[in-house]
Length: 136
Image (tube, rainbow, N blue to C red; front, side, top):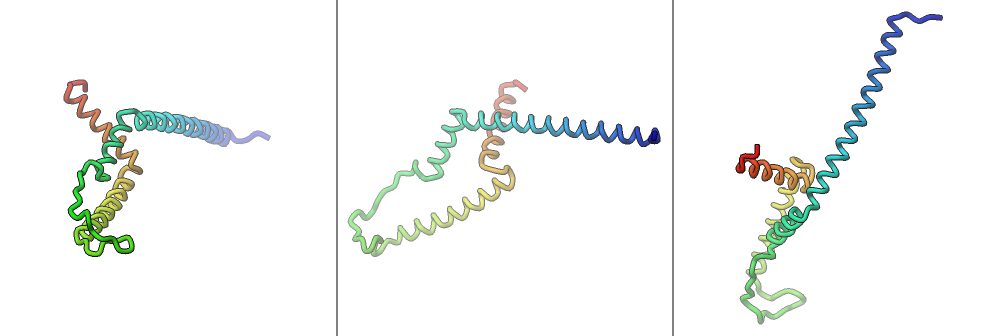
């Protein structure tokens, strides 16, 4: 039994499209792997790691010199009896924590992760540097 030539043509087109979709999907996987390797290479470069360490140090307050006003304060069950400066510091750290939570939410919404933000910032810096040196 012989099928209609139109049906043969349609079936051949379907086979070609399936093969083309499979090829496109494979190319997409390869590109994604390459981009992933490139991102890991960029993010684990010594400059990126040093920059992340410096930023983390500054954000964490490691570069701030702290002075203790009352070194002889009496401790009572692990807390000072009267420490209004400590209460202000705790309130500030609570506000800063809330702000950082909001900032991380925005970073994840816009860039997917902090690594995405770092990659974006590095690409912007690279563009600015190449434009400044006329390498565009």
